[in-house]
Length: 167
Image (cartoon, rainbow, N blue to C red):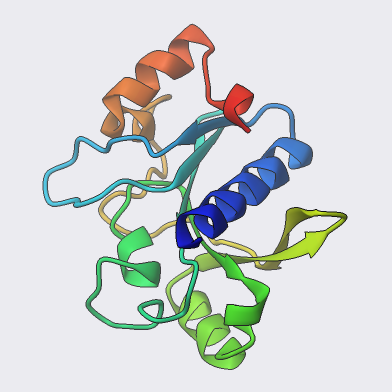
C-alpha cells in the first residue's frame, strides 16, 4: 500500500511539471554519481534550459522533519539540483502543516501536497522552491553542468529520451 501511495505521489508531481510546461522532461529514480550523495531522488524534471528540479516523496511525515535522516527535507537537500521539492499526501501534511512549511521555507525547498480528484491524484504546489544555494547549486554554469551529476540521465536528455511514457 505504501509503495502504491508513493508511486501515485510521484506520478501526480510528474504530471504537474508536464502540465506546467511541455519543455520539462521527466526522469524517475535517476542515479546521482556524486561522492557523498546516498540514495536517488524520486523524480528529476529537467527543462530545456538545463533547469534541474529534484523531488523527494514521503508517504508519511514520520521522518520529514528530522534533522539527520535519509528522508524528507534533509535528503532532498543532498541531491544536486537547481530547485528542490518535497511531496507528501495532504492528510499527512495537515498533521504538521506549520512546521513543514517553516522547515521547507528555511531550506529553500518547495512543497507539493497530493489530493484525490476524480479517482486520480493531483499535486498542488504549497510553497515555491527557491534557487538552490549550496555546493551543488548551478548558478553561472555552462549548459548541462548540473545534469553531469546524473551521468545516465544526461545521456538520455541529450538523446531526447525521458520517462514520460511510464506515467
